[in-house]
Length: 396
Image 1 (cartoon, rainbow, N blue to C red):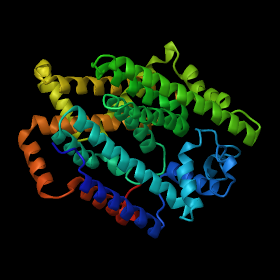
Image 2 (image 1 turned 90 degrees about the horizontal axis):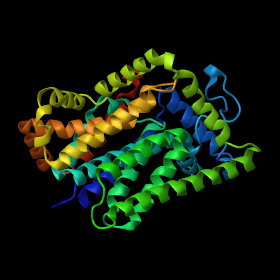
Image 3 (image 1 turned 120 degrees about the horizontal axis):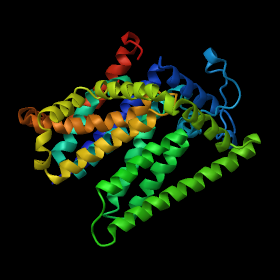
């Protein structure tokens, strides 16, 4: 059986990325999203610094509303490095951040469809490739320069790597890259990447001899490797600035947790739970509604589902529920923090929709079969439309 992404279609995806990237550079695209503008500006400015200073970006006046100055310590500097490297090659500095964001989004989409195809069916994977592009979250984040798609990509690298260990030890490299990448891109939020990895090991353990032990050993080794990367980062940061990075960073990130979540603040935690629940209903719509419909009308048929589908639903449910629980504890909260959970809901909801309504699923499959490389063509069309309609779209 053919894979979710045939080789010829992969070439079309690659060509589509080059077309969209060229359009971003040629149009001088900038985003009205404040975070994206901040990260794009810092990336461009960082590209003019010596490489030894790339671990220690500054605010450089790119957040004038709050008059932020000095070293940028909101997160580690990983999100800036690829755009800065492209700028060093002579490409437009600010637009390079958006091109990297588009690449991370495209890679995430392909890996999400591939993973769905591996643990379910090829038809499910193809449906995911098509349908998650139509979620509100996909439209909102179509071309951005912030952390969300890189972190989703890191999570998916870990899951694909753990799944790949049933075939080769080399998949360990994907797990290590995903964990280290998540740490360097958004620091404390690597916890969600680790959560996804642990849940995968629980719900999809290898059962061939010592397979489960191999997976857990590889996962632990990847965490240890990320720890070494973090230690090296601190050493390089101290050489560049004379100060340690991680101690100040953890104090800033974990401080709101001890202040905002005492027992008497239960009402605030409940409010934040509601905040994330509402976003996880809207941002992956309409596929989130398919999950709601299934839960209301067919939950009693849970045990009748194929074992693979049951495990997939259980894994997705556990990841979303635990992610929201963790994210609801700190005083600081934002809908973008649940971005990875949004795409998990969207992917599982898309599969639920095509399986629950066979007529919809069969029509989608026929359309996919008749139009060569339909998911790639849809992705190209939506990205170019975003560039063309950008001045006329509301800022979200």
